[in-house]
Amino acid sequence: MKKTVTLTNNINNLSYDFKILSSGIGPDAIDFQKLYAQTGMFAYDPGFTSTASCKSKITFIDGEKGKLLYRGYKIDDLAQKKSYLDVCFLFLEGVLPTDEQREEFDIELRRRSFVHEGIKNLFDAFPDKAHPMAMISSAVSALSTFYFEHLNINSEAEYKTMAKRIIAKIPTLAAFSHRRSFGLPLIYPDLNRSYTENFLYMIRAYPSQNLYIPDVEVKALDTIFTLHADHEQNASTSIVRGVASTGAHPYAAISAGIDALWGRAHGGANEAVMTQLELIGTIDNIDKFIKRAKDPGDNFRLMGFGHRVYKNFDPRAVILKNLLNELKDELDVDDNLLNIAQKIEDIALTDDYFISRKLYPNIDFYSGLILTALKIPRSMFTIIFVIGRSIGWITQWIELKHDKDMKIARPRQLYIGDTDKQI
Image: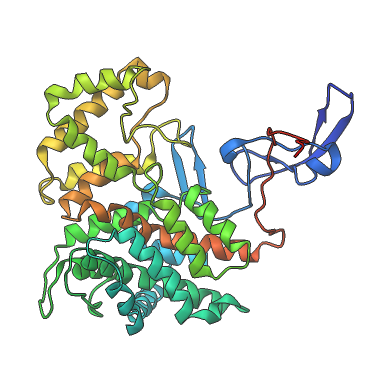
């Protein structure tokens, strides 16, 4: 039996029936595709806070319970027991890899990590100290010129090749962006190194240097990649899907997602957290800044707290906090900044102001401390997000292409301007 909901217009007393679409888990959705045709009205939903723009099998979030699933698996289990490449395989194939599949996948990504030599010339054109996010966005867009055939994909095998190509090359482009920003010689991928280790090698090494990278550092960064892999229909993912709906090249869609991620309200938040911790300076100054955060007349915001979706603990923040506690000595974490962060969290978790507003620590609150301990420059923080999110973006792109209900993204508006003006 089909479930429906009846809406009544109290002005004209007309009623309209709409189907209810059932979800596997989480809220059901009212099918409003024919809302305008039936009622002559639009739904008004700024920021799409209550609108499901698509159907997806990739990621599920329960914001009230602080729950995050990738393909049905809890983020806690994946982050602790599996690698980022396991998660990439899971996103693309729908299942976790066997040992043999993991090895084959790893080897293929290593081989695909090299970029066309012509791409290097693009980096030469950027000015000194250009921001890495601007460079990687341009470089990913430029990849579409080298793999233009991906514009017309006709088989599942071609989808997978396209996806693995972008996943493999983004860390290389990210490392090139970093090195160009600092005027350092570019370092090619090392086929003997794993995905995450290779990225650290490419941003740290010098030509002919056989650089050793501790496993603990690789594990820490790999966990961050896993936690950033996908997060439902956030701003950058929605942009990727929106661009994809026009029939644009997949790498152009990814480039647009990178641009959206660059915003301080999105991927740039962990950089803002670190800047704020340094601004606070010492534990003695915390009360003063907490007071400012509570003052409605002060524009100051406490960064790293609250989330658009989570109304409970961000499960990714919990994982990073535990990881930070486990590795703080081995990673040489800044004790002063860590103490400030922990003190702020202690206050927020016991203060009615934060509790009543459900302002819990989010992933950005701790990721910056770990990235700083890994000696990754602050200008590269959002780039780290890009690397991790690349698998989510490209899997969302593929899912949209397989969706028979897919239409070009075209929201409507509530016009409130002038009418019938005369010249």
